[in-house]
Amino acid sequence: IISQIDRISKLIRSLLRVSRVKSGEARLVPLQVGEVVDEVFSLIGQKLRADSIEVFRDYPVGFEVLADFELLEQVLLNLAINSIHAIHEAAQMGREGPHSIRIAASQRKDYIAVEITDTGVGISPENMSKLFRPFFTTKQVGEGTGLGLAIVAQLLREMDGEITVSSRVGVGTTFTLLLKAPVRSP
Image (tube, rainbow, N blue to C red):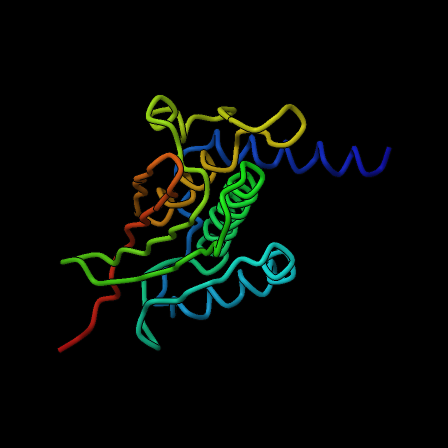
């Protein structure tokens, strides 16, 4: 009973986060991409090793974005977990590895692009337009709420950012986070 109450409480918190408008609570400060990525992958490192998923980091040491640490951490964690599920599904379908998740960051004019690329099953074209809708999921009943990507999009809006996605069925998916670049004084 207690575990189900905890599960329902988490679901309600997620629903509230998705439903609210920009709260102004995001504390945008210059953050090193590597610090946030390291924190996320330390949380899921055991799962990555168990599934033989390699992680590649492709950004300069000290590379910064303007973001809220906790919100960006939650965004990256949601996307990494989705990548793990997609890779697991690809492996179950018989696609042999090596499987990987790649995190890259680069400067693009006035913003920073952070890309999360996986070697999972990919997303079908008919599902691409539905990805960020609350309660949309391709997972089996009981395996997902369909709130993960809706929350990711909301968190990015709170940080004045955006998200785009590109995917090829049978190859993998890339989510691109567009975040503000830190302002540097001359």
